[in-house]
Length: 188
Ligand SMILES: NC(=O)c1ccc[n+]([C@@H]2O[C@H](COP(=O)([O-])OP(=O)(O)OC[C@H]3O[C@@H](n4cnc5c(N)ncnc54)[C@H](OP(=O)(O)O)[C@@H]3O)[C@@H](O)[C@H]2O)c1
Image (cartoon, rainbow, N blue to C red; front, top):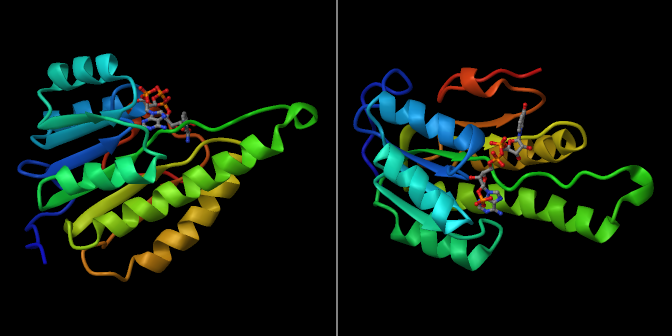
């Protein structure tokens, strides 16, 4: 069991923030903010070159290039993490969008499954590893993906009672990236 932190969500100094999908966009900007507040960051993404550039720019604790929807790769990643971490933000993978007439139902089904099970897997890995007072933050998308996010909310809140997972948030709707901060979220 990990030790509790003294001042949750006020300052990130001394905390470890894991950003799955942290080599670009909202994840990278959040990691930059976390570093500015004194946190160590661990970044992931699929493209190793872009990831390494981001990790070097931020002075990341470590980075790992893998597809987060690959359960075995995700298991290895969490196995290699420091024993205790404080926050996990999941941004990638992006959603599959198509006009209804063009929608590939197989692909839409896979996309739904990938997002749902990624959140469940991250929550499972967080148990006993995320210090009390830490957060699991899952970035939802717009449009149809909000439905997936709603499902994830239920699953994650079900898992929330497990030791070590004290806070779990699903962002839905439109969230302006630059105003996104760990521990502060908006719901529309
Ligand atoms: N709620 C809102 O208002 C709102 C607004 C904008 C975006 N979003 C959602 O937020 C998410 C992030 O948006 P963004 O603009 O930051 O996107 P982005 O700039 O494309 O960044 C996505 C990040 O996730 C990584 N990634 C993508 N698929 C991955 C996978 N399968 N495994 C591991 N890493 C993966 C990307 O790196 P690699 O490509 O190298 O893997 C990159 O680091 C998207 O899902 C988007 O739908 C929500």
